[in-house]
Amino acid sequence: MANRVLRIAVVTETYPPEINGVAMTISRMVEGLRQRHVVELIRPRQNPQDSAKHELTLQEVLVRGFPIPRYQDLKLGLPAKRQLTRLWNLQRPDVVHIVTEGPLGSSAIAAARKLGIPVSSDFHTNFHSYSRHYGLGWLQKTVASYLRNLHNRTDTTLVPTRELRDTLAQDGYQNLQVVARGVDTALFHPGKRSEKLRLQWGVVADGELAVIYVGRISAEKNLPLVVRTFKAMQAVNPKLKLVLVGDGPVRAELQRQNPEYIFAGMRTGEDLAAHYASGDIFLFPSMTETYGNVTVEAMASGLAVVAYRYAAASEHIVQDRNGLHAEYGNEEEFIQHACSLANDAARIGKIRGLAHQTMLSLDWQNIVDEFEQALAQLAVKPEVRHVTSNLQPATDTNLG
Image 1 (spheres, rainbow, N blue to C red):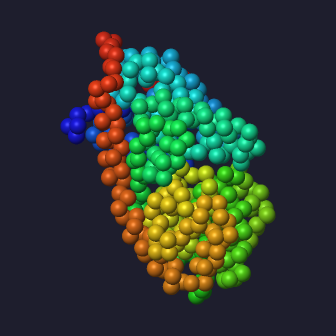
Image 2 (cartoon, rainbow, N blue to C red):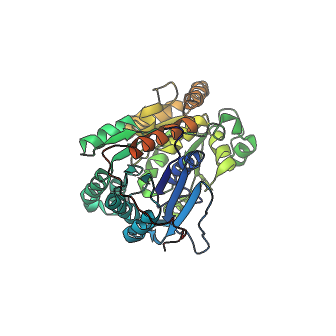
Image 3 (cartoon, rainbow, N blue to C red):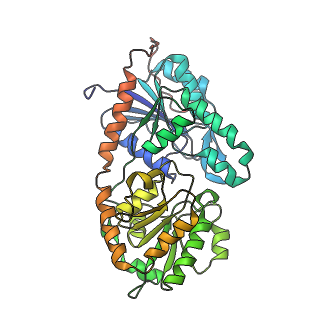
């Protein structure tokens, strides 16, 4: 298997330079795969100037898309079954991998099934959980049924944690396989701590600590609990500062209500790494994560994380050693854990050191190897019937 070069079609509705956990994760996987295989990346055109790359091991195909309501910087791909069937008849991939569950992903599954191509999928985002945060709770069961049916049309669904695998299995999902997520421990590292940045935040004296949140500033992230928790922490230690890194649809209103907090906006790369590492305590009260990349990025950066006991926090936090987690949905316990750190610099220091050490095992190369093996095994399954074609390879990389 290691010596066989595969042609892998990856279908995703988000990709860098878009900024979100799914885009970051799949770009890491693609960059790893193309070191050994040929990747055909199918994604929506992000803007009128967007053009497809056509390199030796990365061949992009752009399709039409439309903005997601309240997330205008992200797009859903339009259905493209006919175009993808024609494309894959011309040059057949060994396996098709579906990253996102929108119309493009669904139509790609249909095209792969029609041609008898093995197909896998990722479970990245709890869209059915998001619906209740936007006044669409009545759609939750419908969306959950759609997602289950979509993933069960694939040969395997990859999930990031054992906990999520067990939960989805109880909900009727089939052929689940765990492939973990990685973290860049060279980028997200305690050594990126910036005293200059801490001075800008007003963290200047002994006993002053920076409490930080990183992520989308949107309804599904449960940010009111960040505010309530921080106010409770201030009652224990008035010298705390709250820093919120990120952007999103509720930022303006949250900033208007809380002008005393530091809103750092969207940060990327080394700048983001410095913001993480310059904090002390990381609050992450989201209850809609499938994994939560920011949890492992914060731990790798040497922060004392307080989160709910599920997803990445459940997988990697050992209570009161390398972080703290509360029972899922138990706000009082979440607040109590955060308050217990508010005036205990020695305890924070111990947790921070162990958090970083824990993350050193999540090297991205190991994760890419797991992902590659899952796809390679699927590509040679004897029960998958291959449909051959004598047509010539495709050269058109624009389907819309």
